[in-house]
Image 1 (cartoon, one colour):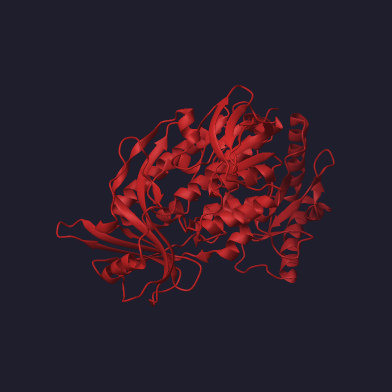
Image 2 (tube, helix red, strand yellow):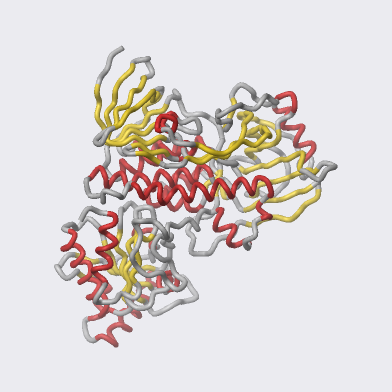
Length: 586
């Protein structure tokens, strides 16, 4: 056995969607990392298939959403049947400012897209490599790994992230508790085609009740890319059933030893399909079990867990993989600052503070929905849809958000920064979206000016913050109030010029000659460039509920670190610096 020492900033164990997200975000921010996986190749299974709108927003920020949009299919809603009778349908409708809808994408395609994105940074998955054990001290983690050819090595890293699934060696070595339970039923999954005439883009849920009134048969179908192709789940027939795991063993996920045949799938379709249909072209099938568990801590020292290593639960609402991806993104930008030496010493502790409550809520909600169905949720349909889309995740109690002011109806510190359209400039020939200006960046200071005169105050604030922090690393731009809401899109060059000129002229009339020129961009008080974009349709002001000049710090994960609205002159720099001091070492 040969021991060699290799150094890297972050070692990631597990190359599923969660580990790949962590690696891609770390590399995007210039952090050296290695990602290992014990499997020799990507598994060809459509396990997790639902992609939530919030995950697409995360991928947009990372600069990789286009590939996902090209590969995915829209998920428009769900058709429901009970005891053979139609029970209506659920339409997945979101507010118009949300840039992405619900989508379906096989997990192996998600992994392919993430892996190809990661390769752009010169990093590849180290396949057939398994983490055996690790120890840590105040300055590093020493991991023992075994390579594909059986050689054991020691690898030194500054941090270790366990994205190694429900049976995580990282979680077990840390001694984290994983409390919860298991569902008694077994299910089977299958990726098949059917020849029914049901509308495209809709999932199907069909249940049957026994004489005691309890559900005794179920069929759930999620559309996949391809002609009438679905990922189907159903109860396991007696001939494929096996004894449940005993003791502390986690019974969760696929079991490769038992593979249902097409005849097993067809038998369920014959009982529960909304119309007669024939299953064909089965690509894969498996039996799986469901447990619900949650760790007590999301990390210890320099070692962290994410995804299934931290939380497992029923697949109801496609929450698991999406929650794990957002775990990884939340952790990665904080690790990047820690590696760079610019993070506040307690920044990494905020990973547990922010994400553990999310995991707890998701586990509880999916268990309830698995037992009672979405229709048992007491909230209105719009709220349920937003929550399932993961657009209501927020961190108002996080130790690293605020101080600041919550908007009367707009987003406050710790809440998601909504997208908006209609932002014009003297250069862009078409209106831009706010997310266009945030893409592929870290922290961004977004300022709102309700008049051209207020732009100068924004410039003073930006310069003052840069002087106090000693860095110009955080980009900033100004959104200048436009002429107000319009009923039509400014989607031509002429309309764009008209909107922009109208905003400028309105400012010029009230603020004197030369004020209109701020739409061409300006500088901060120290002469550094400060871009200006006109809120030509008033969408920014409407969604952010601004009351005069305002400032927003948008974090790398798209949440507001703080909000200053209205922007009070005596306190603006002090409050903003107070927030930044919670995140950065300044």
